[in-house]
Image (cartoon, rainbow, N blue to C red; front, side):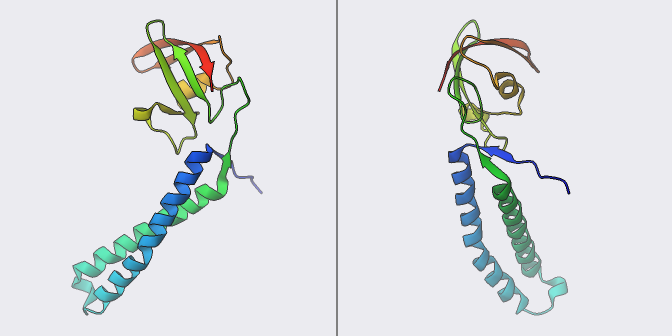
Length: 152
């Protein structure tokens, strides 16, 4: 039997996923009621409301299954002190300016908030590095180098 791969998360990211699961779960009874009400209107073959309600319920159930599996496979990681890992905030210098990145699991990625996945080019390059290390990253815009200044 194949062992399923664990999904790395920060503690905050896993809590956010559980909140999202609960929000979707709270929507389900209303979707079931809408479907039942639409079914009572008769002729299901030409009932657009019924088809839409069925599609909405199907979508809710699929999301619940996906999130449930993700939560079951989730593993909250605590990075080692002084070494970049999932959950680390890394301060770097690219030769011109200082930047910072939070390394997170792939389901928590948010580039607009400088949250990079441990599987992204930047995240992968930073993983397991220490203060003072220089990392070279190949991006679509070309090669960039970061010197690690601080790890939180």
